[in-house]
Image (cartoon, rainbow, N blue to C red):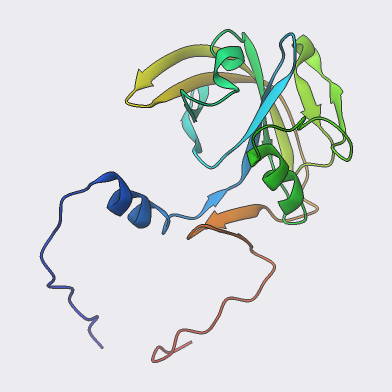
Length: 178
């Protein structure tokens, strides 16, 4: 059976169309934290591995974010991969104008003073090695120095503008063999 061919004409990749296309990419929901006079943290869906030798990861942050001034100066950050049960935590760190570290958020001061969130699927303490401003965002490159992870749960995912998880059975695709 051949797949249907999409013969619609290509369109310009303006920001809204690009955002719609990129929503098809599922990603693990992460929260990045940084120490400062007041600790900061934000939910990021733009986290990825860059290199294993040496170990380098990256995340992106909007320059207009309230977290950017602190992250722009931080020597170390924490990157937390959330479990499928932590949707409320993801939403909390995506909400502006609140104390994201207030109860019910459970956290502690980790190495280098970096806030470490409790009960995440994994956390990485990373040394920031570079920041590159590209358009309206900064790409932050960091080297993981310490990490802790668990195989007990599955990750919280972000796909098509919604939270999802691997524990839910996917909807069957009509017209395809299983």
